[in-house]
Amino acid sequence: MTWHLTPHVDEFRRAAAAYLEADPAGCTTLLTVTETVRRHGLRPDGDDDDDALFGWWRRSPGGPVEAAFLHTPPAYPMLGPMPEEAAHELARTLRRRPRVHGVRGGDGAARAFADAWTAAGEAPGAWTVARRTRLFRLGTLTPPHPAAPGRARRATPDDVPFAAAWMQRFAADIGEDAAADYTRNVTRRVAHGGLYVWESGDRPVSMAAHSPLVAGQSRVSPVYTPPEQRGRGYAGAVTTAVARAAQAAGARHVLLFADLANPTSNALYQRLGFRPLADHLDITFNQLSR
Image (cartoon, rainbow, N blue to C red):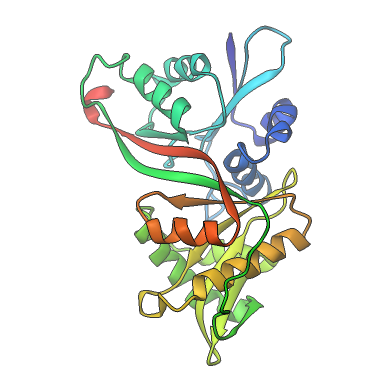
């Protein structure tokens, strides 16, 4: 059983292609992140370093790839679907790697990695579940009824300033880096046509985006409505619009993650026709586990 590691995203995508394409929904994060790296590099300022690491695992030499991960610091390592033995071995493989402060992945794989990282429970309290999310896949799209007032439109370059500010607020809401400048991120989304705005009374009241199509999948993220505009159906309306746009772009799998701590958004997405696929965890390691 061997993990193969590389700092080169193209090498990773070639080696793990069959694994990624066999389960594009389960591998959505790996697919979308590596596609972003391939197209735009790692750093917002274009000053990439060599900290990125990508890997794939085979149970036996010459066998099929059965697991994969990526690590683009300062983000946690992201795990694709994998057997627990692969997660255990990966934790041991990365044990000396700096800047590993937690892990993200499906519930079973993330817990297996965390247990191996902390010597299988020899350090009680050495890791904590920081966030629980659920991956959903769209079945039959069911638009909200009654429809929210207003209309959807594709975002333009003129929308970048307010959309970047909303993206920053969205990041703060979900515990991501709220100090980052999201202008480049939003500009990319506008350029590929994946960012949509819901307008009511000729002003934007909500937004949603879908990722570029990769291996037949596209993921909806973010969905954001300013607090003062919530409770009026705008999030459901703009999510419906962006899901339709992803399908029109050719997506066979329209996916999204929802925070399990937010029952309102989970219920909304299921009313729209999204069905649960798998639970995921963000796990944080404390300093004693190093």
